[in-house]
Image 1 (spheres, rainbow, N blue to C red):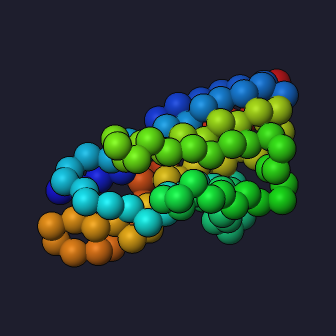
Image 2 (cartoon, one colour; image 1 turned 60 degrees about the vertical axis):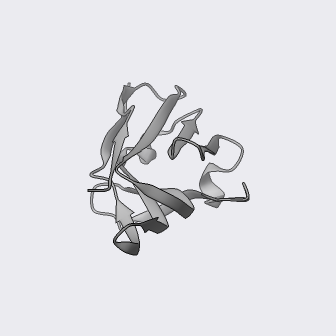
Length: 120
């Protein structure tokens, strides 16, 4: 069974930093793109960042210059480096993998989410 699990969330003060990780398990042949979404209280889930196999990246305007997404293709790991965090960025952060090629076919996967709380 293919699964994606996030880690690295927690409580951080405004202006602090965190690194989120998304680790895949199971047999995976390839992944087209991986990304991070977040959903704060009373808000819609929004794209934070994503990265394609070729390394091209996209960021939400609100996080440009502060967040960095990267991936380890060999191990199907995805990282989100978050700097200078703001209280309004308190949310559950979800790992998303698009175009995951497995023995069962191609599909998309979501992690269960990791809580990030930015508060003094």
